[in-house]
Image (cartoon, rainbow, N blue to C red; front, side):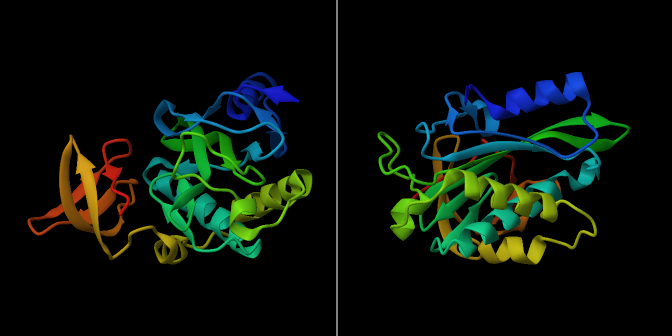
Length: 232
């Protein structure tokens, strides 16, 4: 069925029903999906995979909040690699690329209690069978990248289970696998901040989630939505 946003639906359900078990909501027609920082996620009906997860026992210290992003990013990247989608990279802070083009996005909405973070909705949007992306030159889909047509329901089952497994203890550090796939890592790149172009090398991600870029002058830290990558 159609919904504006699976994250909104799931977050409201969790607040009202307080489920004790892992809960997932998915749709083949999300018409007002949300991205990082209030952006909108555009998805053609019945072509893509959009779902949200709630895992009731998942708690993290606030200073480890970006570890959650890493676990999900790595699990989603590996899942796409298993579909033989080529050149999978994780683009900080919330995107998955195939080559230079966006194929998936993540949005985590959480509450904070007693210095702990509890995710209320882990939202995932993946371009699967969509062939045209009007006005979005840097978007792609699994079908465009592999020339295969996919069954969305089958992919929902496998992808949601992959993420649930990744977020079930025991946890191991995702940092190595994350950096192996981090877009622009240890490469000279061009960036824009406050309408100013500069060059630097991505040298990692701070534990608080800020992107670390080494320039000729200094090592700089950036929070999401303050930095633009220049596509070369």
